[in-house]
Image (tube, rainbow, N blue to C red; front, side):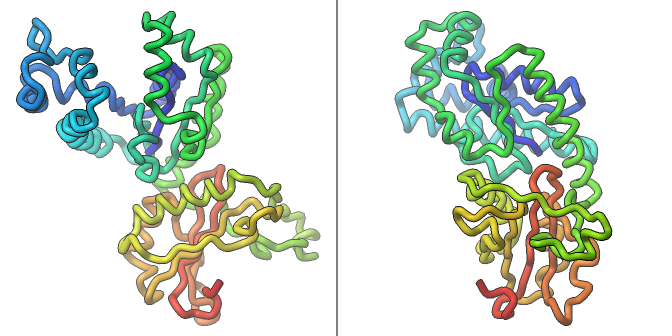
Length: 344
């Protein structure tokens, strides 16, 4: 489940079209929002009952421009419209997702994904980012907007900084269409498709390394065996944002949703260069709770159980999960409350 978003004029639709051509199942929220209020639908009848006949065109279809003018500066009106459209769009989206084949990459094209706080509902969020000057040029040239209207539309959406904070992947679309296609093709081959296959097979993309994921310096037997040394990265502001996105997905996936989650390991220490693995601790009341439903919930969210996890349960009473995302190594330790090894 990929969430795709970007500001108006960013080229998000071009990315969605390219992904569809590569084999993704694309669910277009804008298209669905039109379908649920098409002539003859219950959605349109409810919109007319709420806003009156003035939102209908001569042909009896919804006049989206007239409706937009009514709700753009009316917070109560906007919320009333969302209460009509959003539940119907969610229902139709769920139907399309359920119809996708196992292992499919389902791309949810959602213009207001960030503004609606939908990031944790997806395994990965892709943001298309384009320079303001280019977006303004596209809106005035391709959509016939006046410059002032184009600026107003852009200002009404989340800014680039807010989108970047919600993004696992940022696609920059300041160049040619061919350059954009090459970036999308690489994302598909290197990350999206392997991620989908790993999810289907309940397989972590980052199998355990002998000697532990944070062994530094590497043990002599690792060097002699030619085993790779874990990559180290410089401290940076992106690391806490990555952790926050992962934790939001875990909280949404597991029950109960208030299980304690902590950021541990070297990456959790500000300004410390560290091994490029985000280490998370999830605490349960009883380790038996780590099996069964919880393990399945974590696997569905992109954190499958690692092979042989719990083999040494007498000495290390924990369960260990990895990441199905080939580009974001994670260790997720599920530990029992009160166990000494789980104390921070």
